[in-house]
Image (tube, rainbow, N blue to C red; front, top):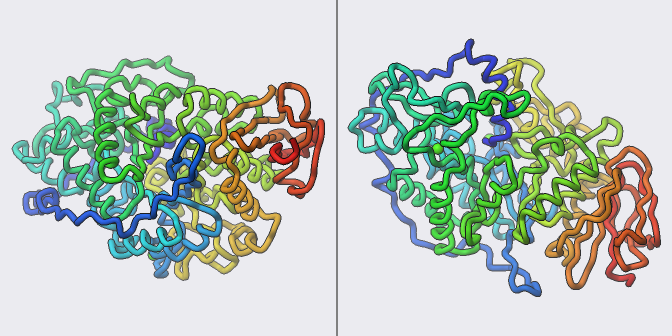
Length: 607
Ligand SMILES: [Ca+2]
Ligand SMILES: [Ca+2]
C-alpha cells in the first residue's frame, strides 16, 4: 500500500468521515486459544541451494551489485495469471510465465503481498507472515516459483509489511484480549484522554488513527485502516520476531524485500500532538492538516533499518532491501541509505510520480526533477518508477490521445536509460491502460468500495494482464476477478510479440540494448542544454557514451548536436528510436525529431 494513493483518497476520507465512521466490529474472544507462532518457529537450516550464483560484472571501480544492473518487474499476483480457473491470479500462474519474463529481459520480479489476509487492504493486512494465502497457492508453490525463477536467472523480491499486522493476526488477537496479555505491548495501546483519543493523530485512511477497544477500554493506534493495527517497534520482542520472519524467507531463497510503508515504524512514545497546519498546502486534506512530526520518519526507524541491513548482510550481502517511503523531500529519501550506506540499498525514488511531473510530459519539468535527484544522490544508486499498483498507469497519465503509443515508447526509453534501476509494472510493456470500474457493483478494491464515487479505488491499474485475444485475455479460463479491459483483443502479448513495431518489441530492444551497454548500465548522467521541448542527457562510461534525446512535445523539433557543449564527437549513430529504423543512420550536426520521438545515439564508434 503506497503512501501516494493514501494521499489520493484523503479527500474522500474527509467526505465520508461523517457518513461512514471507521469503526470496527468486535471480534471473538477466543484469542488465548490461538497458538502464537513466535514460540514455535522452526528455523530451517540455511541453504544456498536456491540462490543464483553471483553474476556481478566487473567494472573499473570493482564489482557492481546485481541489483544495479537489474531490470525489476512488479507483479500484482491477483492479476497476472490464473492457473486454476478461479479467476484470481496465483503463484503457479507467475511460474508459468517466467519464460515470458526471461524473454522480455527481466532480471528481478517484485511480487506484492500473497500472505494469508482478510484482504481489508488487499493483502497489506497480513494475518500470517510465514504462509501463502490459499487463493494464491501454497509454500510448495512458492518454493517452486523461486527455484524456476532462479533457473532463468530471475531474482525474487517479496513484499514485507513491517508497520502493522491485520487485526486478525494472532499477535493482535492476543494483544486485545486483555490488558495483561503478554502480547499487549506488541501494539500501541493507550487510555482515553477524558473520553477522547489519546492525541490528534490522523489516519491515512481517514480521520482518526485511534480506535477504542470496548473490552479493555483502551485505544489502539493504526496509521492506516482500523483493521491494520500498528506494531509497537519500541518493544524489542517485536523486532526480534519480525526479523525471524525475514530469515524464514531468506531461507526459502528470496533475493530481497520491498519494505512497505517503512517510514511509519515508530511513533513518539510521549504521543505528543502533531502540529496542525491547515495552511500547509492548497487543497490540503486530513493528512496535510497536520505535520507528521511525531509519527513519521522518526530517528528510530533508521536504527531498525541499520540493524535489519546488518542482519541481511550477515546472512548474505547479495540480498536486497528496497524501501517504500513516500517522503516530500529528496533529502529525506537520502536518509534511507543510512549514514554509512548501511540502511536500504534502494530506497524507492518516487519523485517521477509526485507533483507536477506525475502528469505533465514536459521537458523542463523532467529535466529539473531528474537533475535534482541525481544531484542529491551524490553517486548513490537509485530506482526509477513510472507506474505501480497504487498509481494510474503512465500510459494514460501522459498520453495525449493521439500519440499514446509513441509516448509509451518514449517513457520506456526514459525509464531504461536513466542512471538507476528501472521498475516496470506488469502490462506496462504492452501499453496497458487504466480501466476504472463503471459502477460500484464492479468495484473490488476495498478503497473504492468504501469511498465510491469520490474515489473509485485502484482497480483501474490492476486489471488482468492481457496475454492473448481469447475471451478472458488468456488470464483465466474462469470468470476474472476484475473485468478484462475492452482493448484486450487488440492489445495483448501474443499480438505484440509478433509485431516488430509494437511497444513490447520496443521494450525488448531497449532492455537488450541496456544489458550490453556499459554507458547505460554504469555510466554517469549529465543533462544537456535547456531545450523547452527536448530533454537531452548523456550517459558516459570510460568506454562508451550514449546520448538520449526525448522530444516531449507534439511538434517536430530540431536537436542540435554540435555546440552547446554537447559532445566532442562530430558524428552520431542512431542506435534506437521509437520512430525510425535504428542501427544504421549516421547523423552530424543536427537531427530533426518527430513529435514525441525518442532517440538513443551512440557516440562510441564514430569518434
Ligand atoms: Ca487462481
Ligand atoms: Ca507505526
